[in-house]
Image 1 (cartoon, rainbow, N blue to C red):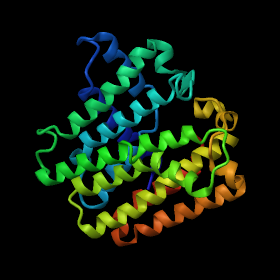
Image 2 (cartoon, one colour):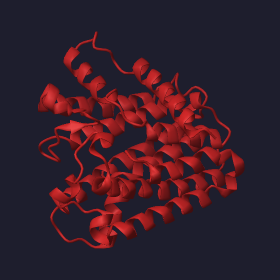
Image 3 (cartoon, rainbow, N blue to C red):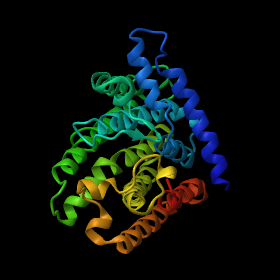
Length: 296
């Protein structure tokens, strides 16, 4: 398959939907809506929405069945980046090659823009019109699943342990907890939601769950490696920032070579997990390798 064309097409679909569902600057409060849109449309690979769409397609569904949920996941991801960049956390000046939200709109508006994106995401997940083709029980399951992976048992919990671990020597289970919760959780949620809203059966859901767990961890290990060897212009942010802050990463704990080996092993595991889906999962197989081999 032509991965580049697929990514371009699905990313454009997601951007069009985000533009349609996000409040515009014409509505009060103007500055808040401007700040929300600034970070959402500051770039990014749209990986989580694309994984959700690909998972939905792998079980026989269509992109339109999950587009609202795909946009909701991107809003949650963006809110996490806005808050992650704040002075109270990573204190970053640039994100995706542009000034971070708080540098443009101030800390207070950045905090509220993140809050609003998170809230808007759950409004969208519960939207009756967007969910008209899904059984009510499935919609409830999707909302509960996303909330779990986004909150204290998922992304937020991982962020807290990540901050608490800065400058400390930690063991491997703690490192894996950080990565599987802070980053891996939303990637796992993406493919699980795709399976649910696409009408997948329990076997398909289980296969995609295994895939999402392995792919999510591989993604974060690849991110750790890029912070060591990546190109700043490609990444759109400073390289070496993890080491400067004493963050817990795979290269720091295991070394670069072993970190790369672990990412490759997880990629192989992710691809193998898709065997029950057959050729319908080809796109996800290619995406798994892209996650590990990307340069930004």
